[in-house]
Image (cartoon, rainbow, N blue to C red; front, side, top):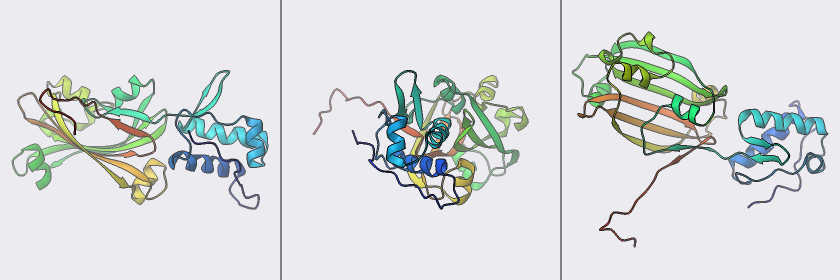
Length: 251
């Protein structure tokens, strides 16, 4: 496990408050994996010596990182680097359900909620005739008030009716209409945040993100949904469960 730096330098002449400078430096250590998930931070007294700042500055910096979910505090034990959220890559679920399963409070900010004729790509991906109507849903997804993902979903309009009926969970509305996805495919690739994405996700421009494309289907293979999402790379790890076929042997 990597050791915590012996010195962290802050600039007394910088207009940025010291606690924000300190928080940004610790944030950088986490993002660059210079410190490990589960690693304990030095005590407040040790951090005062390492940074040359006051206890108040230390507490405000740690408080900021605790709110962001980058640190966690264990009663009577100390403050630790929080593990990234693990997201299963091998089962169909929704952001709302996954956040609740982690004990977090999910919420959304609507960016788009409308009906429109399908584009050429949307018609192809959803197996729709040219000019068919689709419902488009664009949302900023948050957990405990922190922005984590940008999600844009497209479904055949007949599967949801009025887009305004979708409040929190698109999958819940699809289920109520007997159009709940039963299977799907997903592609994940590493990328960099655009200026607009960085602003929405409250991260720096060109920060690491995960781009995810998902297509889901009914049991009979009818396409239900095409979604492309951008997840914060510092907040998520996607996990897949593997198994060995009986007739396969590792190299």
